[in-house]
Length: 200
Image 1 (cartoon, rainbow, N blue to C red):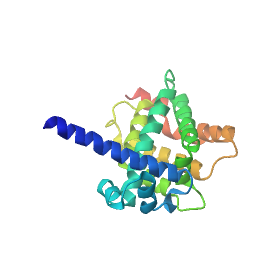
Image 2: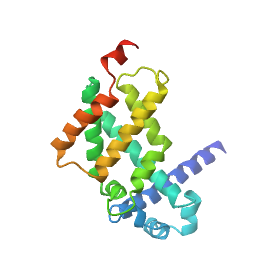
Image 3: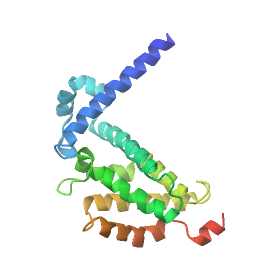
């Protein structure tokens, strides 16, 4: 019996992933806000009733899609930081890699279309998953335990997400321009100062 339940759970995950994959293909062609649930069901090859069994509404599907893709971006960003120990360099590299990963993915790019409601920015701001991943990254820059100064870590994590979404909506002139902005305006605010590190 337990084996059957496990198999059912795996089938459920596979079906949900298939729906999200189909949604991603549509998002790559049109802004995410313009894609309807009936189109996603059709692209996934399922009925609307089946779609709503997995995602109760469009907001739930959007949230699931963004969280799945955010985990993928986060994994690749962390892999790109192997061997980078300096907090300033870690922040700059992680930030620019994250920007590139989102921009290189047409489905993710559509979430930040400036000519449409930027629902990607709204979800990034309200998502507990994205907040937690951002806070964990801030802690990895040298703040010690997450509860050492939880409010400060949370504010820095929110600022990091806001600057990232801002540059996705309104890019800099080029990669060098964005790197300079990150180094000049983000690094001093988000990375710990020598005083912060000395008190830990």
